[in-house]
Image (tube, rainbow over all chains, first blue to last red; front, side, top):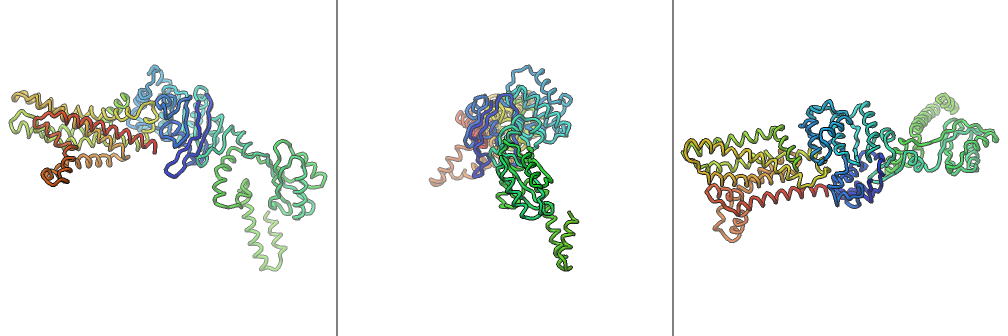
Amino acid sequence: MIEVRNLTKKYGDKLAVNDISFKVEKGEILGFLGPNGAGKSTTMNMLTGYISSTSGEVLIDGIDILEEPKKAKSKIGYLPEIPPIYIDMTVEGYLSYIYDLKKCKLPRKAHLKDVCNLCKIQDVRGRLIKNLSKGYRQRVGLAQALINNPPVLILDEPTVGLDPNQIIEIRTLIKKLGKRHTVILSSHILPEIQAVCDRIIIINRGEVAADGTADEIAKNITNKHKMTLRIEGPNHTAEDKRVIAEAIRQIDGVKYVRADMEREKGVYDYDVETDGKTDVRRAINKLCMDKGWNILMLQLSDLTLEDIFLKITMDEGLDKAGSAKSDKSKPRIDLKTSADGKLSAVQEDEEETENSFFSEESDENDGGEE
Amino acid sequence: MLAIYRREMGAFFTSGVAYVFLAVFWLFSGLFFYGGVIGSGTTDTSSLFGSMFLIVLFSVAVLTMKLLSEEKKNKTDQGLLTAPISLWDIVLGKYFAALTLFIIAESIVFVYAFILNYLGDVLWTPLLGNYFAMLFLGAAFIAVGVFVSSLTENQMASAVLCILALLGLYLSEMFVSGFENGNKFQKAVYFVVSKISFYSRYIEFTRGVFSLPSVVFFISAAFLFNFFTVKVLEKRRWS
C-alpha cells in the first residue's frame, strides 16, 4: 500500500533522513518510533507530499507522490504534528471546508456526522475552534484526516496533549481504523506504539535502526540470549573468578562469558551469552552442584521495547562521547551508580582508617555498609 | 479552488479585515467624491479615481497581508499542501477572494453615480472606463500583495513590504520624471521605469484614455505575480 524506496532528505548540508526504505501492507498499523529530531516528521512530510525528497521515491498504492501528487494525495489522510485547523472557524464549518477541499463525493451530511461520531466531537460541532481545548483540537485534526475515507492514514503524534482517558480512546479508535485503513503512526511514547501497532520502525538520526514486530526487534537487537549470573566460589578470591568463568565457558551453547565486577564480597557476577538455541541454565546449575559452588542469582536479560529504544538511540551518543566505561556496564546503569557510590564510600573510609592505624576496620565498615 | 475561495471570503469577514478594508476604502472614496466631484460642481468622477490610487495601494496591502503568511505561521499550509489540489488552486482561490472583496469595495461608485443622477447627467463613459481601470489596477496590486505575503510569516512584515514595493514603484516614477530629456543612461532608466509604472498607466485612464496596452500590462502583472507566488510555494517544498 505504501512503499518507500531509498528516501533521503537534505537540508543544506544536514542530512535529515538518510536512505530510508520500507513497505507497509494494506491494513497494517505501522509505528514510527524515534527520539526528537530523529527524522520522523520529515519522513511523514515526505510521505504526504508536503515537502519533496532529495532523492528516493514514495509510492502510495503504486502512485508516485511527486509525479501524480493529486491522485496520490487523495488517498492520504494526514494529521500533522500541529493540526492544520483554522481557529476562527466552527468545527462544522471547518470540516465542511475540508470536505470541499478534498472534493469528497460521499453524502455530505451523513459523512460529516459519521466522522464526528467517530472522533467524538459531535457535541462541539457548532463551536469556534479557538474556544476548544487542545484535546478537542487534536480530535478535530483527526476528523479532518478521516474525511473522504482515505485508504491511508498518516498520523504524526496523534495523542499529544490529550488526557489519559482521551489517549486510550484515541488508541482504540486508531486500532479500529486499522481494520479499514493502512495507518502510519509516529510517537515517542513507547507503550502507545506497543499497544497500537502491528509493526514498528525505529528511526534514529535519519536512519532505520530497526524494523519488525516488538519481539522481532528485541531478538535482532539482543541477537543472542543474555543472562547475568552471580556465583559464589569456594575461596572468595579472584582466583575463583577465573576458574568459574573458564568452567562456564566449557558448557555447550555458551558463546561468551565475561566476569563482571565484585558485587558481594568475594563473589563475582558473570555476563553469559548463549547461541540462543540451547537453554544452558540447567547445565550451569549442574556444574555448580558438581563443583560445590552456589548460584546466588540468575537473571535473564530479555530486553523490553524500552530497553531496545534506549539502546538504539543512546548507543551512538555514548560512543561518540567516547566513554567506554559507561558502555561496558550499560544495562545496569543504576547498579553501577550505586556501585560508584559504594566505591567512593570505601575510599573515604580508607582515608579515615589510614589515619586510625588499622585497615581491617575499614573492611568491617565496608561490610556493614553492604 | 472554490473551497479555498469560500473559506477566504468567510475569513475576511470573521477576522474583521473586510470591515476595515471596506470602511477605509469607502471613507476615503466618499471624501474624494464629496470634495472633488460634488464640491467642484461636476458630474465627472475622474478626479475621484485619480485620488484613489494611494488609497488602493495602502488598503490592498492590508487586504492581502495575511493570506499566505498566516497559513505558514499557523502551519495550516500543511493541510493545504497535502490536500489533493494544485498550488494554482491555492493561490488563485485566495487571489480571487481578495479580488472579489476589492470589486465589492470599488462598486461603491455606482452608489455615487446614483447620487449624481439627481444632480445632473452622469458621464457614464469615463465612469465605466475608470471603474474597469481601477479593477485592473487592483487585480495587479492584489497579485503583488499575495506574492509578498507568501514570502514572510509575519502579517505586518507582509503589509509593510507590500506597501514599500508598490510605493517604491510609484515614487521611482516621480524620481525619474526629470530623466526624460537627460543623457542616454538617464533616458534608458526613464524608459524602463515608465514601462513598468503602475501610476502613470492608471492615471492615463482618469484623463479619458482607455489604453488597451495598459489593460494588458495590468493583467500580465497580475498573472506574473501569481505565477511567482506559485513558484515560491513550490520552492519551499523543494528547499
